[in-house]
Length: 149
Image (cartoon, rainbow, N blue to C red; front, top):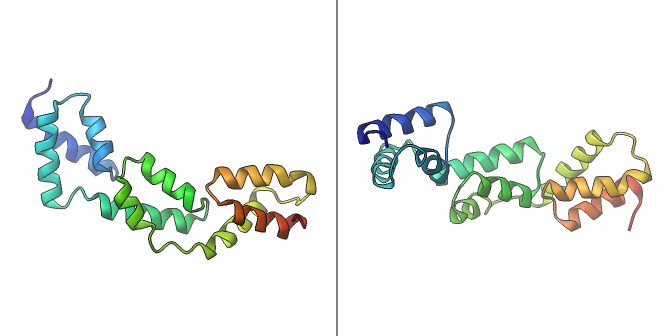
């Protein structure tokens, strides 16, 4: 294992490239450092404000909402995949506007499938579901685009 004095600078270097959740940072550091060294580095990073899972979850949720490429479930899945704790993800999505999901899904479907042929309906439905839009939203978009009930 590398020396304990190197763990903190390595963690800071990783955070300088991009934001990491505590879980992501821990996984990356475990390749070279032992758990005690990582715990000490994470404690310092939290105290200095360099590592904040709650703030990261809020920023990433807002970013994904602004992009309009995912529904609530898709955003939740992406945040959890980033190693963010469930509580931080739930708090970040607490004010989520589900009403805007229809607009996001309809715009995304129209952009991805511009022809609007009825034969595309199943593909559009699968695409939107895979992006984390709920069934009700997917059906509403299909009704609007293809007249399905």
